[in-house]
Image (cartoon, rainbow, N blue to C red):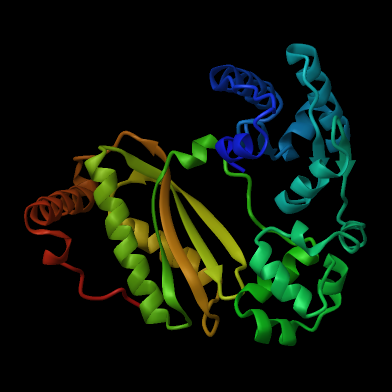
Length: 328
């Protein structure tokens, strides 16, 4: 509750004022320690982060559990603070494991025992289950994650709608989200959640083309080019995936972005599948490299066209000019 409310209820209480400057300094120190073990660090809050240690295990030797022990020891040695660590095959399980043996804990959930470990835990431990959805699940007799594991998928979909697939995937310990590093966050992206989940490929690709146009415009405005193109998809059951492709040459051109994004989309064979969200991003940003030799005239022409379209939209609004078709 807010401290003002707490003071009204308990005026004789002792209130300790926070020192946010110091918390920030120590947080940066600890994040620096983590980055000494792996560059793949995703800070979640001032005192929490996800790490992908796949490559770090090979580099530092041992296994992920040994590495977790070394990280804890380094934090203790350099800051005097304890840290609780969860080791697991994905983000959901790692977060769950980190809470199991606080304070100063180190808990492991493996691919083999994840269903068994999850089963007795309350349903509120699943990400996305708040007070309202917890009450709805309890009305169905679902009080533990084990109850959800055994519950009929068809019945759950009927009662909980699109959220059902997301809930049951986490109940099985499945989570395909990647650790998003600070480097990856330095990107230019656009995404859209459809008002109604759709399997209409023309609508999906049309939306993707508009997003590529937006990203291309912003890349040119910021005078950067993207070396990596990322596609994001979320299905009707809330399953979310990202696919990336790194280009041989960085680009600001929306049609190049669209060609790459469409290939990534086609590779997922989404025909007949209902899509909830689609997004496109350009990352690994560098200075643009527009060549002027004989063999690069097409690139130069497209760059001039893009600049002309940007100027026209800047004067008359984004809707003044649109491409005629998203293609097949």
